[in-house]
Length: 235
Image: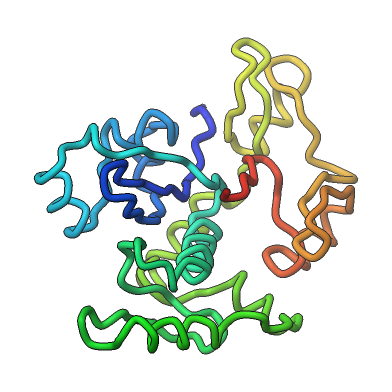
């Protein structure tokens, strides 16, 4: 039995220059560290750019914020790509690339190559589009990019197979356990409900809803995502 630990998306800001960087992290799961105990405590990003800035200003010159948490690291990675794209024309952003869900390609910023005006035009070109169902599906299941190989994604998916999130009655905390263990100790050691209606987050209406488990599984990451972890919106 282990305490439920989600992957997460974060933002770090240099309080001196105002420059900021977005990233996502799932290595904390293996380390059994909650996001708040991992970011800027054990983990200081894998970005070479950020590491250079830390050497110049020190770790205390940064403000950190966890924007989003989810049990599926693929969802976190997709969230990270979208928020980088939303901020792509901001001259203070330190991310130099992101994965473009519309064309399934990687967009790279060529430093000192394009003018500010040209970069702004490229950024505006991707805004204001009406998203079709096919478009939403591409965004949701984005299966290429720095998330890793096909084999790695299969391993991540397998790790969550036949697992449920329940409440440990002794500690009051969320835990991820096998369905067999949950059924064996239901209402004795754990509480929760794995049958019938479930509560989900509707990506189309941006509201919580109650649907059947079958409908949720059929439209997972296309129309619905789970709400077992907070869906914090960036400010």
